[in-house]
Length: 157
Image (cartoon, rainbow, N blue to C red; front, side, top):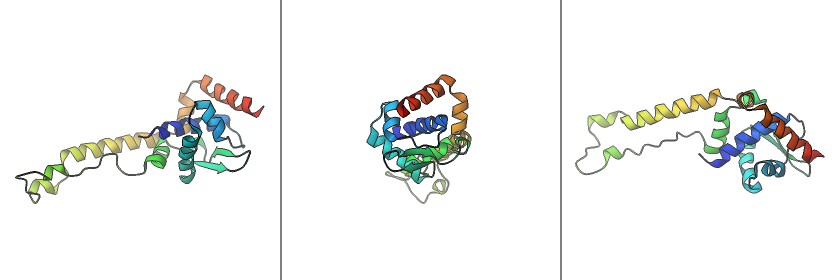
């Protein structure tokens, strides 16, 4: 998984804690988390395309959550960055090599490796789909929420 997934989850959490109608700039978010602004912006734009964030141009522009935190799952964020494809891609190497007949009956079914990996991927996706930004807000220490709000206030003056 790319690091932009972690960055995006933290930014969504911060935007949810701030609870403002005003967009938060990528400059502010990159400063808070000490992240490269251009790369963070690219990751946040992926969330805009996925309908997770809204982007507001201009001097006072930035990002806001497009949906309530309870309607944004971790799977939504992962898929926005990584796509919907399975993490494991079987290339059927069991059918290669000398002495192998690709028409053999055992190749009519998916191999045990593919079956196990797809089962694990499905469990992982179910778990991510069951967790929302609101769940993270509830699980995180209140000090983290308070620190995020203070950071936001300090930038607003």
